[in-house]
Length: 251
Image (tube, rainbow, N blue to C red; front, side):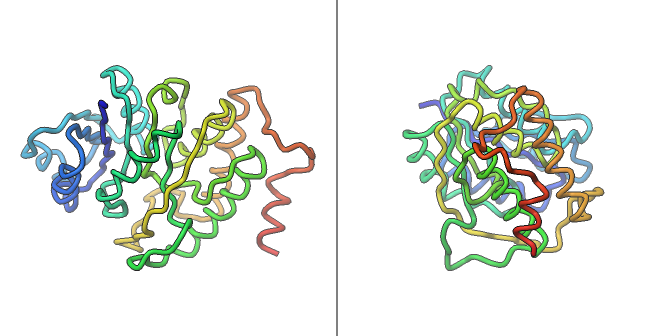
């Protein structure tokens, strides 16, 4: 089975070597998408052997890096694509768990909230709150049963991957992906992964550091994803609104 592990990186000079060293224990093909890094990441990658590499001359965004990974995997005849971050949040030792589960699914998504691990640490409170809100909205509106809307540690069956038409280039890309997965009735499975925040002070570095603006942006991505498909969810009662879910969860 032809499996590619894709790792988007942006200014990860402090982590990229150690992450790649560990990933090599579990993967023969590693694709690194350098999304316009301005630190020494590019120089570090020049010193790495046996990696495949895409370089964005300018930073395009997390979603754009994953779009490049999707396109590369499909054009290079991969059977399975695994995506993971390069900031220490994802343990490469969990790659075999994803690979085992993908035999029975179109998408396998890591969940940091499916069960507890000894090495878990606390998520920043605003991120946990927004993840909870958006995850509930996804489940209610699209008939999903996920527990973690934003985990980037995933495995894709490339036959299913070919159906996606992802256009969101920023941090909300996973939400567009969930809407399309629901629309195409894909088989989704979650596997538990540890909740690791190596640097709890790490920021988005944009207006998304404001939690209210971030939540509004995520909801905008959901609406745009629906409009792109000319589809408005599957909630049978017709009574769902984003505002009502917010009020129910925060009252």
